[in-house]
Image (cartoon, rainbow, N blue to C red):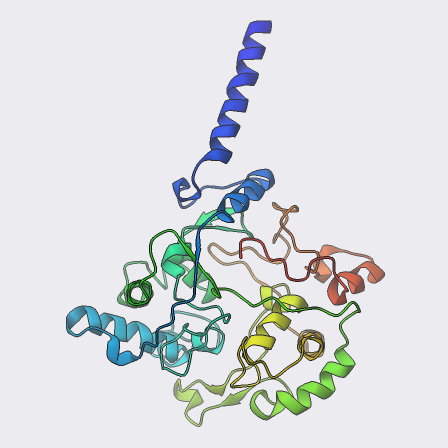
Length: 349
């Protein structure tokens, strides 16, 4: 019996070592990881080779001709005018949010969505998936991520649909056109880090700053500006800032502040920002606490706010705060507004 216990213990240890030592690309879509495995997963991912942002300007004229080019162009159109095609008032009604993808995945003044550095670019998306989803602790595909962002499922937005194939064709073309190799990370493919002030975020100051920098496009009510043909699927001229839920990534103040610093107001970039670090943080505080937001809901491959990080406490940023966490008021305010130990941390970036 003792020999069996020793053998069993060694076998379990060997399995654990094999699991943590395996290449992250070996994980199959649908595999669930526990908290410890998730930590090891991102440690391995951090070893991925990082290549410089491509010093190359692409335009839609660089898209190839023929059937392949037609599919890529359709993918570009879907990402540039998502509401009109995929949105709830659009022709196909395959997604739920009333927002166009390029509102967050900006273009670099070239008409190609997801090509702006440090603004959630698409340029290396093909290399980044499959990936561990920290909300569900499940390995998901790029198709799963696209559906999750659209608050939809594989019935309404199938992987073999022309729309999904078109978006993936565009992503694949970006990787190839920028000459990024396989299994690499690209500098600037997430959000730029900023120097956070050693103080709590101030939504009162943020309200005044919002009036100066944001209200002209997004409205005093943060509902954006609708196009004249909105009811016919025309979408928004400027997006609503109420599109993300309470508990989503953008509801976390450091996460939103980093995005604002690199992208807003229109024309800003990580290299040439308009907002200071303090201003970006305070505006983020006002946007996320000055309005009533919808609760985060569960969809296929996307956890609800009550389960986000429940399986991965070691990966949870120290700035993740939601009423559903049942924190006492003082602790909630500290977590929500900071200051934080590591506000530039986000698992897997």
